[in-house]
Length: 54
Image 1 (cartoon, rainbow, N blue to C red):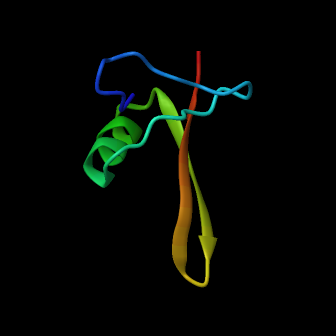
Image 2 (image 1 turned 180 degrees about the horizontal axis):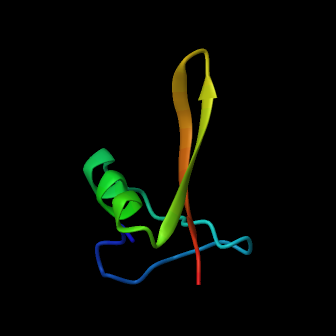
Image 3 (image 1 turned 90 degrees about the vertical axis):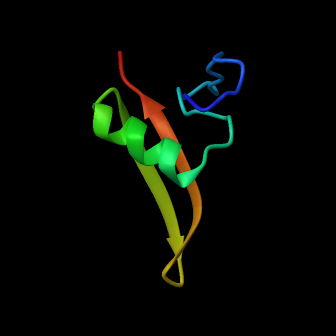
C-alpha cells in the first residue's frame, strides 16, 4: 500500500514489506481492506505491519 511505484510487496504470510509513513498507515487502516498489527515493547511501537485481506 505504501510502495512509491504503486506495486504492493508482501511476504509469504501476506504482510506488507514496503515502508510507510504514519499517515499512509492510518489512511489504509481506515479503508477496511487491511489489518494493522503493531509490536509494542516498553510502550513504543517497534514494528508495524499491514496484513492484506482478500
